[in-house]
Image (tube, rainbow, N blue to C red; front, side):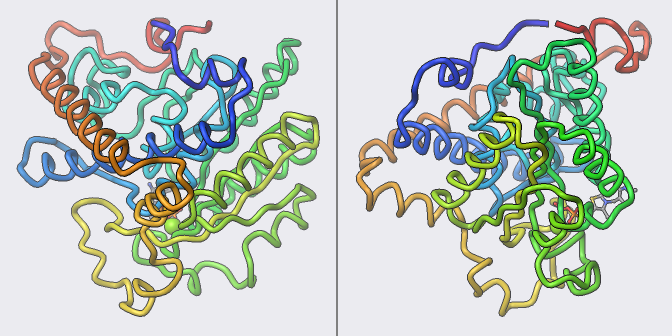
Amino acid sequence: MPQVETDNAEAATTAESWEDHVRRTFRAMLMSRTLESKLASLYKAGKIVGGVYIGPGQEAVSASLGSCLSWGRDIFAALIRDQAGRTAFGEPILDATRTYLGSIRGPMGGRDGNVHRGRPGEGYPAMISHLGSMVSVVAGMLLARRLQGRMGGVVGAASVGDGASSTGSFHEAINLAAVERLPLVVLLVNNQFAYSTPNDRQFACRRLVDRAIGYGVEGHEADGTDLLDSLQVVSRAVQRAREGHGTQLVVADLLRLSGHGEHDDAFYVPEELKHSHVGRDCMEVAEKQLLDSGMLTTTELAQWKRETAEEVQAAVANAQQEPPPDPYREEWKALSTPGLAAQP
Ligand SMILES: Cc1ncc(C[n+]2csc(CCOP(=O)(O)OP(=O)(O)O)c2C)c(N)n1
Ligand SMILES: [Mg+2]
């Protein structure tokens, strides 16, 4: 499997300015929003078989996490709403379009139709479930590296949702990570709903970050609608994990600005919530932050929008002309197949 050269790997070895880090993170947000809008239209046009799950409103904190990790060194388990984080971490957008469009050249060989994709041998495990199971996968990968004596400054990160944080998988994994003082960052994105179940039917504690005390890990809170706040908080958590302060829990509040999947119109989301602080669109907030602070000019923004649209168009066109796997010729493989799960 090819090693993917990313801006991140470079950023990890050179001292990157805060401004460049913000710009790089915003660019990944923009790419994600553009790609996901295209995927949603392809789904509605019947060109994508299976579900399409997207993360509008979650790009700021997701991209912040991806951009603080470095491909080839760190571990990142992305979930359904982490397209922005995947892009910021260094996943090429062709991996996404090939997966959604069923190309045999996709990272899973055309065997997955949406988000269960990754490059496990490169510290990027494929998602098993959205419901907390990836926290233990990353904890296990970190433990394995420790036992093999190749920890060397690695940070592992896993996202979970508010719903996932109520599961046994989440509890067992974060507890184990805390006991072992693993350099694990758990990003808990509280988007107010688990499918149609609202927060008040999921947990009785006032603030989810208070759970950090119970687990004995460091807790951080971010405004998930605010790129600058999200990036600052996530950077600090990743740095604390990297410097040996053990497991970190970051809780980000925001609102899911889509349905659970593109098949869901989210009729159950109350209007007041949409117009509250968490209902702000992080893309609009970030755009204003970058323009007002002079980190980005209007000309650059227009150019970035053009470029991301062209890149998405090209990646879709590319994947559309590639063949699907042939069930009569292909041996149906699992991740244990060496080609799919090759160790570096
Ligand atoms: C064991 C299990 N139960 C239910 C589902 C269906 N399901 C997938 S995601 C989801 C909601 C998850 O909510 P949350 O953790 O808050 O993440 P969000 O979708 O809000 O990002 C449900 C019910 C599943 N995939 N697996
Ligand atoms: Mg949720």
